[in-house]
Length: 488
Image 1: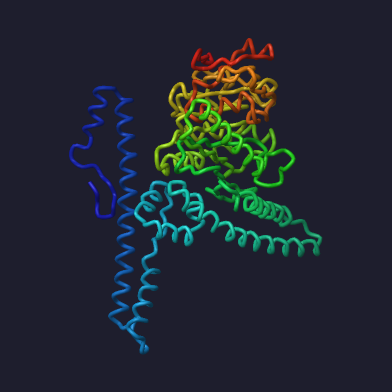
Image 2: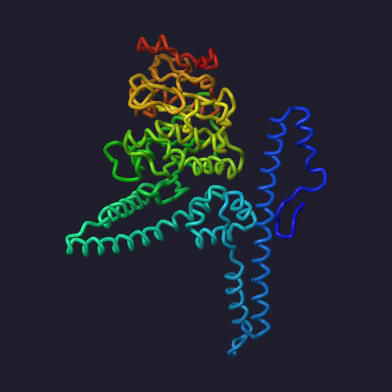
């Protein structure tokens, strides 16, 4: 039942489904039925409240127009009927603008669906900060909001920098110690981050800014290569320790480096589809940098960064699903500390059809043993890669989170060694070996091929891990489809 304020409450007989589920499947089934009902209740409530808010806004605007017309507001001062009509149309257009967006993802989705495309576009102009990270609304509108938000954020930071420079200068004259200098460096870093985002993404063919958020030490972004709303296959890549938006040119751990990674993954996904004659299917890749990353091993030994970003990353994943025009095959790719962030996002309600972890220090932040079933990803669609010589792997610099991932039952281990055969059987092409911690997404490697095979829904083309061959430093093509090796 729906109340006058838009709340959805239980009506007669609403407990029947839970009772039947409990009778047939026990307490767990009853709890699952109750959770499903509450999720449906929340979604319907958000939709109803968005409709009521829009209706109230329209009613208020209509009342304002009629009142002004009755008082001669459109025809006063000797104005002609034609001029009054034009003036009334202009003012009506402004009055019928979209109401402010709700703050919850479900509410934002229902709100956006209640608007026309023109209204949604105007809302992206009027509420850029609120919609730049509204992952449940159409990507084109979110991108428009993000680009509108960027100059506003730059103006805010520039004003902060000017104030801090003044405070620091006054403290220097008095020979006093102050936090102003430290804070000023942080604000300047955020300004450099905005410059880097604009330089790297704006005007670049195929790139889309789909998220923009300031955090404690910088400004993060969500950037896509390709159209996530129209793609058949989408891969979301989450990088690890040391990643920053700007100023990491030498290491590749900045936004330009991450864009290069998702472009390599994008091309590898296309190659994977071509290898199985699926030429008509489309792909898109995303890099998730909308978080504060740990910068050193000491910081990466705590799950705090992953836990802080898990909810936002879960929303990004769910937003890909919600805004897809055709239903997409969604794969989460988590590297290094990013694998922990990805795991926590999936455990916190994020959706993915497949997940590939690589170079992972561990996948559980709670201190308990990691259980793959908590990811919500179907059994058989959860993968792990560990290259030879990867020092970030468990047993390296710090203890793993929840146990060594490569030794976890329920994750399928994929190979990272070189291979003398391609899946088409020819020996003229070769996949290279990944070694250490940072070569997993290098071009023409077995590990990149495996990511692309999983991300395009072609696991039969992925290459299984073989400990004997990898330890000998050589290998031949061995597909998962022929002999699935499950980590025990």
